[in-house]
Image 1 (cartoon, chains in turn cyan, brown):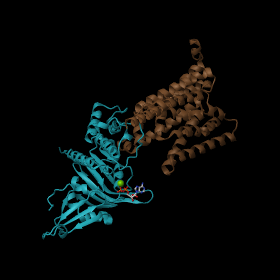
Image 2 (tube, protein in one colour):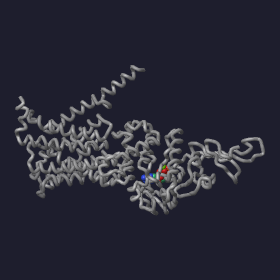
Image 3 (cartoon, chains in turn purple, green):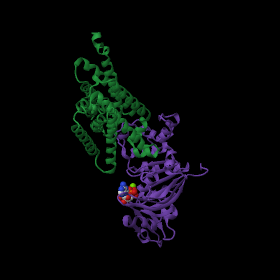
Amino acid sequence: MLQPSPILLNLEKVGVTYPNGHTAIENISFTLQGGTICGLVGVNGAGKSTLFKSIMGFVKPTSGTVTIAGLEVKTALRRNLVSYVPQTEDVDWNFPVLVEDVVMMGRYGYMGFLRHPKAADRLAVQDALERVGMAAFRKRQIGELSGGQKKRVFVARALAQGGKIILLDEPFTGVDIKTEDSLILLFRTLAQEGCLILVSTHNLGSVPAFCDQVLLVNKTLLAAGPVETTFTEENLAKAFGGMLRHRKLAGSDLHDDKDHRAVTVLTDDESALVFYGHQGDKKIISPEGGGDGSP
Amino acid sequence: MISLLLEPFTYEYMQKAIWVSALVGGVCAFLSSYLILKGWSLMGDALSHSIVPGVALAYLLAVPYAIGAFFAGILAAFSMTLVKQKTKLREDTVIGLVFTTFFALGLLLVSINPTSVNIQAIILGNILAISNEDIYQVVIISAICLICLGMFWKDLLAVFFDEAHARSIGLPVQLLKIMFFTLLSAATVAALQTVGACLVIAMVVTPGATAYLLTDRFGKMIVMSVLLGSLTAAAGAYLSYFLNASTGGLIVTLQTALFLLAFLYAPKYGLLKARRSLHQKTEKA
Ligand SMILES: Nc1ncnc2c1ncn2[C@@H]1O[C@H](COP(=O)(O)OP(=O)(O)O)[C@@H](O)[C@H]1O
Ligand SMILES: [Mg+2]
């Protein structure tokens, strides 16, 4: 179901210097279009969250411009083009709001003046809750959920908002593997529906498993492009410096035949990224196994 | 007996006192739903003291004192948000700082110009002696508050619950916050005349706190809070006729009594309910 003209997110030489004088990101330019899942990868403090906030206009870029579907950020937000799931929710968990009330807030932009929900809004809320597997919790007070469940509710709110661009800042932290897998499945479906999904993560192992594109950042953009060509050992070494645990298993460590291929395992703390093969034609093996590079 | 119970209604000043109190009680209770959720309970108290310099100035300039009070209140509210935004001081520190500054300024003004204001009257308030002119002020303020809150209560909830998200769906966050603090200042001024500065804080805290114990839905919380606020205010004014006691004192005592009931018997968060579920659990185990 491809859109006639996919939505575009365009950053032109964006830089952010915080009031304390710290430059968090500088000179970041890229264009992404609907129908893709893009991974935003970088160490802690690389500026991933800052990049998201500057796309949303929550921190004003000190240089450069952000355009969304050819529009200024403010206009794009008012048209509900962008949904954003921040890294940490700065909300008060004691508010007397139920899960469904929170998700309904994603629909406010579509409602009239008194924010009275129509049938379409209720449907969107129900649908969003089902997609993240939280429909059974709709009548729970928002504070009475586990960390992972809360995360899913905020993803549902982003879905209900119906943004064509969905920004997710480290959605997998504090979420169990099963939930992570179901979220990934959901992102894939959304990308097929024409959404542009930008996900920051430091969980390298899952990047090849679900991203089409990848942006490697450390203050500035180090590399950008399709996962197959950009998500390489060399680029990752650039992005992470000495921060990764690095295991290289040479052919002789692995088996007794004349095969000289080596396995490289890169991980920071979560699931490992595995390279296997000759220097020249490295294959990426997703952690679930399989892939044509396995011995 | 019946005629005795109806006696307060035969006096015009009692009729006025009852319905004006109910109106103000309702408006304050509406605002209280937001204040207690944000941990801004002391804001009402702070504002009510911060308006003293405005009142003093208004007397000096011979303008209605509600106007002076209103602007001083807004100024105080904005000083608080500004200091909060620009420093990393905690909310309670900022409130304390701003409100004592304003109050001190007010005392200074009054001491320099001693005959101008009867601060005592402001601090204690007296609904039974309210003038028609003051009633107009209170009614207009209350009507504006209720209309604005009625139209924007959901937007305000979205802003106070998750400001970042409110911005991301394109709500005018700053404008809504300014509106809220303006209404709060206005309502504080109105409440001053009914219960006095000292008890305003109870009017903008207790009904919301009671309603919070009774429900998990914000909409219901507002309705309950407003009902509690206006009924207790009306009842307080009514009872003050028989007990010959301070209206403000009676209103707040009634509100506290209802809070205690909710505290003990609320279906979900009440003390007894918590005990009971604990019992059931230990019995099962
Ligand atoms: N509000 C802020 N003021 C000053 N510096 C900040 C602020 N927020 C983040 N930073 C700094 O900017 C850099 C990037 O932070 P962030 O975008 O949160 O990184 P990431 O999300 O990739 O871990 C860090 O060095 C951090 O210390
Ligand atoms: Mg971050």
